[in-house]
Amino acid sequence: SRALKVAEIAKQLDVLEGLMKGPFCVGEDMTEADLAMYPTFIFFVVMLPKVFGWPDVFHARPKLKTWMKHMETLEPVQQVKAEVEGGLQNWEQQKRFDSIIEQIKAAPGLKWVYP
Image 1 (tube, rainbow, N blue to C red):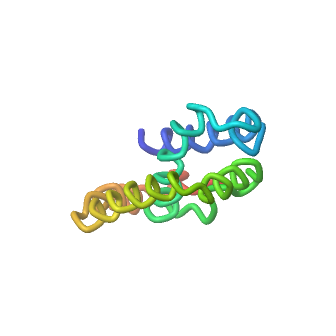
Image 2 (image 1 turned 90 degrees about the vertical axis):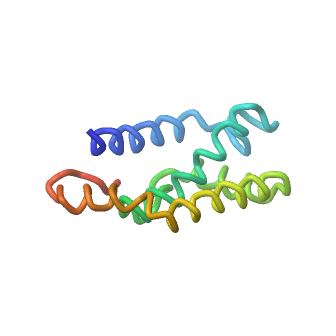
């Protein structure tokens, strides 16, 4: 179910928190891991609060929070952020999130918000 997938996201964020070396994923240099994770994290930062009601994606995840802030200081990353956020804004305008939000409202007994 969707609720189980949201729980898995929370679990995997905790796993990533434990693996993070800093300032980049595996240490001092940016690697493919940073490049692969960053767009997904933009999605998380937008979607998890907006659709699922998470108050803070980085709650109890200080290494991931620091990593995200560090990534966003890099000029090429800012372009990626603008492109992904633009796409998500288009999805919102097209009401692509509405059915998910309705599913959440229809199942208040399921856990959607983490922590």
